[in-house]
Every structure is written in C-alpha cells, then in structure tokens.
Amino acid sequence: MSEMYSRERARTDLALAMIQREARTNTIKRCTGLSDDRIRKLCSRYFTERGGNRVRRRRGKSPQQTARFVRNANHQLQATTLMNLFVLHSLIRFEGASFRATWSNPDVAVGERFCAAFDSYQTVYARPLYSFEWAWALLVALARDEDLTPGDCDRCGSQYVRDRYDLDLHICPACEIRTERRRRPGARHYAGA
Image (tube, rainbow, N blue to C red; front, side, top):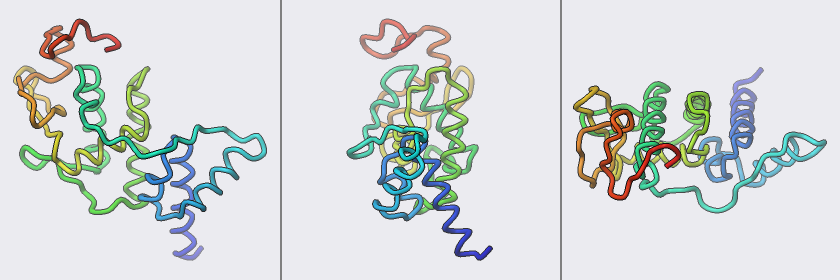
C-alpha cells in the first residue's frame, strides 16, 4: 500500500468517524482537508443510501460561546472532564496558568485523538451535556487561551476550567457540588442545572 493511499484512507476514515459523531462539515474539513463535496458524498454514500445508519447533519456555524462551559457547576464539571481528556490525549497541555495546544493546525492525528477523547467523555457521563461540536468548541477555546483558563482548587488540589474574567473562589465544580456550595447568583440546585 502506498503512502499516498494510506494518507487518503486515514482522511476518509476520520471523516466517516466525525460524520457518525455529527460533526459539522467545517470541523471535518479542518481536520481532514477534504472538500465540502467529498464530505457530502461520504455522508450520502455511507449514512443515507442503502438504509445505512442515519446521522443528523447539523447546519450552520459551529458553536463558539465559552460561557456555556462555566454556566453552572454541572457544565463546568463536564468541561473539566473534557479538559483532562484533552490533556490525556495530548491535544493540550498546561503551561503555568495557561493552556497550550500541542498542534498548530488541526490534522488527521489531531482529529483521531479528539474522537478518542470525545468517546471517553461519552462513556464517563450517562447524560453528556456536550455534543461533538461543543466539545470541539471547548478544545478550540482552550487552545486559544483567551476566555477560559485553568483554576486550582484549594480543597482537593485539582485543576478545573474557569472563566478568566470571573471571580475565582478556588473551588472546583466537583467540590462545589459535593458541598452544595452556591457560588453562582440565582443557583438553586445542581442536578440537571
């Protein structure tokens, strides 16, 4: 098998994996370099023809708002889980009080590691709050290191995702939920918030 064929096969396999996880076309393009038309044809051939598995194709721009990741303790806890999985899968790393991407531009290897991290996240939570695209938005936000930053918990010593411009009380979402401490205005409960 030639090297060119292997590269093309890896790009196609990744595109199919991302389509199955309901990634938007632009996200797939960024990691695979495939054209819009090629992605549509893959989707049509493998997921709609011959009674194949139907996947929901999401339209429009990918989500970009970072406030969702720190909206409440449950959202922040799941964002923190994703952050740790991104570190585990070598997508980001900590540099002092900042995040750094381990890549300059997404490619097939980044896409494959991201899919593995996302699959792990889905096995951790019975009801994951974040779709593939929201998880991708979190990775991009962490890699940009603008609005979201790591925080250090004074209670358990763990690191967590926090809003860079919000008051940091140095308590991670897990400790907040465990102690039922209400640090957000208007918070009444945590389950399903």
